[in-house]
Image (cartoon, rainbow, N blue to C red; front, side):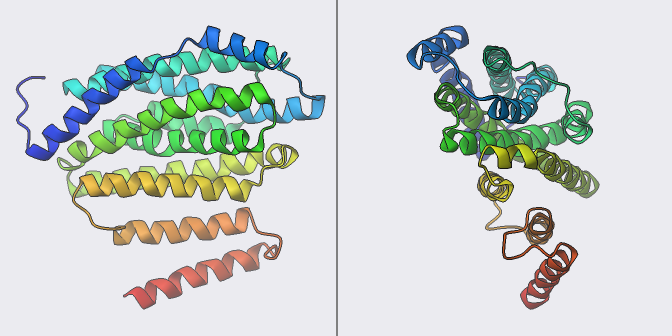
Length: 304
């Protein structure tokens, strides 16, 4: 732990990771007290049956996602050798434990019994839990799954479906934003030591997580529509958050702008999302997908 030689950039990132640990400690909140005070403030949790079931199914993914994040952050805290990221991962494990029990208490307080995840969402989370390389876990959880959770939090909060949940999600969002920081600050240190083959492996893993994330979002589409939230809106919010996180990551790695291979991936993902979640004026399924893919490759040829 203390024998590692660091460059100036690594030392700077390490200081920020140490700050994440102490900042999280200063901002820790009591889940039992916060939920109880919000329930008292709003006179209970009141939703009709249709909303309860849709909201519950959407937050099944969040509940089990928090448990997965708890397990993964504990794995990271155990496996990471460097002190500062180890501290940050330990802090995250504490946050995720709180998120899990508070979300469970909220759902049961709403009168909803949490259900097992569907195959696609379960595969998404298990792919990150069971992957071995640290870089894969960091990218899969911190920069993919966490940003997906942040996107759902923001969309549900802005929809103001239920006032207790609307205020509660602000606490979740502040914590999750710090968790993304662990990936942004520590992944460059791991990436600098990767071989080309390892780098390609990380890219393949990212594509796998993206594919399962899109499938998971598609599975939630009926319930999101019931709640008045457009799945395409979720995708666009998530894409923006992930792109911002990756731009910060690439900046730490000394990369200016979007790397060429990542730009191609972004275009491809946008094309698939356009087919999965078409706008009202663009609902001809396969034709929409083929046109979008054609536009992406035309843009690629012009860029060359």
